[in-house]
Length: 598
Ligand code: ATP
Ligand code: MG
Image (cartoon, rainbow, N blue to C red):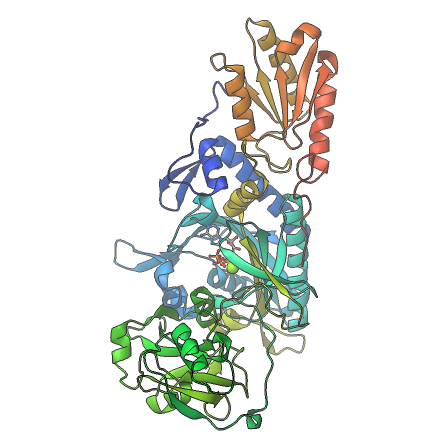
């Protein structure tokens, strides 16, 4: 790859459209270009990284016996109607019509088509277990496409699916995929955690995510300091302490005029000489939201009870209630139920009002609260769950905080942010049932197949690697995915350095190395150095000033180290530097080398 002819244009300044480091650098380095929100073109260097990531994923999938197939992105509506996802996916689906007016969609993921493929090809338990996958473009009309290829509306995904006749088989298939994911992300030089996840719109049971810890990530996850529990904040289970409902005094209503907020209420209560001190944590806050089931016009009110010192995390609540949509209730929604007195709502009357009422598990059975008395300016003390009110269910809805207690061991939870790299699901029989996927079992009777589904964002991984490895100067590709193994830069005047660099570049290529060769004549040495740091190949070789002493300079992009090497030894030394960079997982200094699980 000669830079004089390579289609690459580096930019000096950060593009205004980009906030994230990876996004800025991929644009500045000429790796990708934006076509429309969430829609990107890949230029040669970007495509090279994308193909290398794809290659690692493909190798590890093949190594566990998964077979590669390719399914269409264009899917008839009828197929998604059968799984219920034509409605469930809501606004996230790209929908279109053919010339006859028949509805189609662009596949956001492919459970339906894979289920149908196996139904068409397999008829006996002897055909299973089966693992198949594809690396294919997906379409999702994301609400907030941001961060470049990290969250695209068109993006490349590896999606694998497994098919087994029983739960034990599914466990084995799931484990094989999960292990392959660990090898993949390790080879890609990504630092990652495996966390429990909500199964969401997919339905099904066990589900885990692979998350790359990263300040700019959109996912929040927790890890326990006391045990190996880790979970997406959407799925976290906090420790709860149930109480004995009979221990509490009977509930009484007190006048608390002008106390529509938790803060004003606590201040008022503490000024009333009630014989005890109150804090926000003693109050029960009842937040009114509205939900709408897929495909329905009508919104339904839902009241969510949480401890008064906590906020409702709308993203978490949304994930728990999927595929239903959730939105904050408007004043007009509240007016439709006159019994809901704004600022003074309590759960005591919910069943009478026929409003659905759920609590966060922290509002556990037998616990006692100060809450609204459902009259303006009045609150009720000692309102006990299981005695004075009975919620319709529990939904994890509170915003999780650092120091919250682990539901497994009671240990302290720590919060961090990250990027979801991949997701492994035990889907179970949901799709097999919807499409009638059965095979004949060993006893001759039909068995419904059980499935798993496993995704990796290939294009997202490119950005995630960039995000985790970049430094102030630019990109810093791990050797396993760099678009070239070595970047040869020629500097200086006259033809000699160019001839020497030509020879070196050819020699390196003959050795099987992939060379990016900056053979441009115009740009200064400074510009070329800056470009090499921006573009981020793991090994950089400078052919120029050192030639008078018979040396070239070999730079390690990871550690920043520089050594002079005799021209005659250069090919050997460079090949060795490249293989050292490769064997340490990430760059030679190994930042973020082999990911850690758990
Ligand atoms: P997210 O929560 O980030 O929207 P998801 O949970 O909806 O992702 P999955 O359905 O689990 O995503 O898809 C499998 C993988 O595909 C994800 O783990 C992620 O790496 C990748 N992916 C999902 N959405 C996008 C997107 N909009 N752009 C790029 N990659 C994506
Ligand atoms: Mg996911």
